[in-house]
Length: 273
Image 1 (cartoon, rainbow, N blue to C red):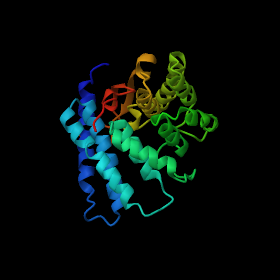
Image 2 (tube, rainbow, N blue to C red):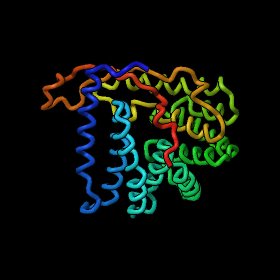
Image 3 (spheres, rainbow, N blue to C red):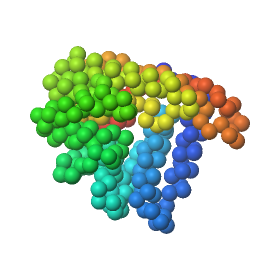
Image 4 (cartoon, rainbow, N blue to C red):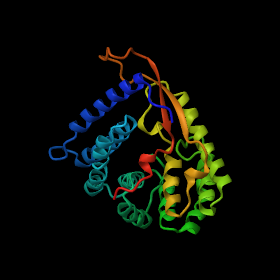
């Protein structure tokens, strides 16, 4: 993967500084809405950890990543809305991405025991997390039975997360078929890159990697399948514009810059706990 250009480093450093200041604004001890405070701390720490990783500051990255799961767990504990499982989905997703396997085991069991409504989500539809939970537990037959519903979601124009390629990638993982893995992953990469190409303001954190492919790579590894080795090149160069240019004379407004990335980042393919 290419090195970050100097102007990109400068831009990401400013974004990281903004992120760290945002984290400081959350104070669960005094917040009127504790669930929002814990949830915000978890999500913003995740964003900060990833941007610090992009900048090569592994110590800061790991420090911020270490704050994600405890705060996400507290958001779940403080949630008083019985039918809102989005905090559970977030905890499960963060645990997968950050390699906290004990938490993944616990969350998978919880999700599969919940009565899941279809109108509440954390990025992905609930079906996606249930399928991941089955795959993590080695319940591949149950996961495959969900693919009909997943394929219907792929065909919906209003669905922005489950895109064509998910079901192919799942079948490739379950059956350990490299050609299907590669085809599914690159369909998802193509859509992901198309989205970032037409994103006219600064890219959000989740644009710097392809989350569906990364999550399926993680559960694939649990099943003994090396997805990343089978899908070919996962690097890309994204283009974006200056983030929040007001009062920032160090970078001109609307300056374009490039961000070389790995769409399946190695920082999400390690075990931390």
